[in-house]
Amino acid sequence: MRISSQYLRILTCSAFVGVAVFWGCHLKPSGNKLFIPGKSAGELQIGVDDTNAVKRKIGEPEFRAPFRENGALWMYPSMGLSLQFKGKKSLYTPVLTPDTTIVKILLLQQQEINDKKYSACTLQSPEGITVNSSVADVIRKYGQPLVIQAPIGMNLENDNYTGSLYYPGMAAIYSQGKMKWIELAYSPSMDSNIARKVDDQPIVAGKTLGGISLGMSHDDVLNLLGDTKFKYQKLNAEYWLYPQYALKVQFGVQPIEGQRTQRFTDTSYLGKVTGITGTAKSFFEGELCCTEYTGKTADGIGVGTSWSTVQEKFGPSIDTIKVSTEVGILRAVYNGIVIYVDPQTQGVHHILVTDPNIPIDVDLPR
Figure 1 (cartoon, rainbow, N blue to C red):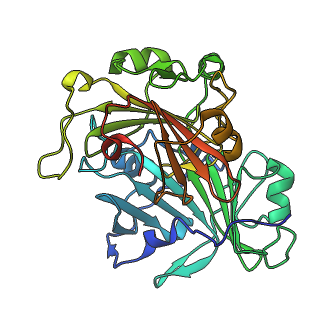
Figure 2 (cartoon, helix red, strand yellow):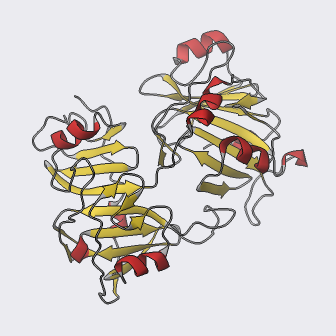
């Protein structure tokens, strides 16, 4: 299998950069020797346990270091563990009650990182995957990855494989044929009834996508999709991401003080849905969407539709520009709907339904 990505993106290496502080070692052995992708590692629950819970379960960390967005990195080299925590509320982090629980757990192979000698983590998955598992072992147990990131020309069959294999709630990171670590990340459960309703509803420009309509309140969205841990704010919009349904919902808010932004001309959207996005099975807003949004317009336009078909059905766009996003996407603006095209596949990567009267550069993804 040949990898099309242009380069390897290691998401977690930066977590180890910087000077850590020795904090003493009071580790408590755990009786649970299993890890569950997206859920847990031993007794530790991803997205549930905060720092106090972690200390009760496995003791104080051996080292601590700051992490991005006011978060923290707790290191347990003798256990082969490293934990990442979200930070407190800030400009681009949660807008409601801050979530300070475990974001990711790294299960490390024996190695030295920034002068810290890590023992090999002894946890294993119910399928028998450990930090000693080969690429072939992982694929044999979990099947083909949802996303593969590696240098151009790197094959999974290569004995010196370097790259990352992403599955729901888990990534296996390799270098020169050997696993470096397993990364466990929170993965929300999917409700099949909600997923079916989301995909069955048509896309209507300027009105609705995934069963969510412009002008709905927070409570309306909660009733339809449930709650999500992925909430953040950028400039004039508050965002709720539902990776399990490949949906993102945005709400109008007052501009953050000190930010140079346009203001709404119509304040009726404050606290209301101003846009809904359906996306592909891929990374979106830094999270892995493990499913693909399958709703379509009356013309049959949806995620995966070719750019040429979009142009044929919709005609010339109001505005078409390249924007700086995770995949270097082309943005085509139509009346009440915005199409984002993946330049590699020339297919629709994600679709945004919004009110054409809302300032384009304020509430649309960058």
